[in-house]
Length: 189
Image 1 (cartoon, rainbow, N blue to C red):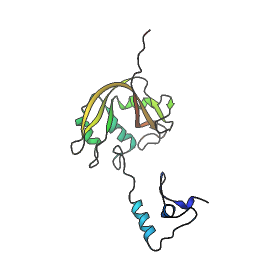
Image 2 (image 1 turned 90 degrees about the horizontal axis):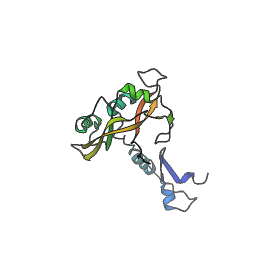
Image 3 (image 1 turned 180 degrees about the horizontal axis):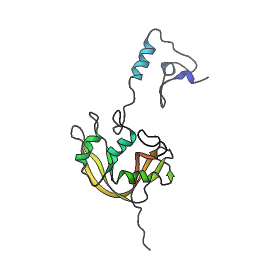
C-alpha cells in the first residue's frame, strides 16, 4: 500500500517519518545495512511514556487512589495533604481537588445520569448538589512542591467504573475526578 512504508510506528498514538521518507523521493526506500535501523528503533522505543503525576503507585487500585487523591472528611491544608499525592521523585502534581465529602456520598454520585467525560467517554456523573472542596494549585516546584490552598463550594463530576478489585462486580465506583463546576452566574430581573 502506498504510504505505509514511510512511517515507523513507535506507539499507538505516535509515528515518526522513516529515514527513507526524509531523504528520498516518494516510492524509493533506503535500506540501511547492518544494525543501524534496529538500534534506532531500540533507542526511540526506550523513550517510553512517563506516567502522569497522578498515576497510582504500583499495587494501588484506581478506587483506593481516588480516595487518597480526592476524598477528605473536611477542609485540608494543601501543604499537609499533597506530599502523599507527590510520591514520585522530582514530580509535583500541578493541581488537585479534595472533596469534603464522604466516600459513600461520592459513590452515590455514580448513580446520577451518565454524561460525557472530558476524554469523550460516557462514564461520568455530576453530583446532585454542590459540596465544599479544597483546591490546591502548585506555586513552587521540587523539592518543596508548595501549593496555594483555595476553599470552594461547587458541583463535581466523577468518572465511575464497575468491576473494581475488592468490590462487588456490578457496583459503580469513582475512579477519576473529571471536573468541578462552579454555580453558574446569577441573573436578576
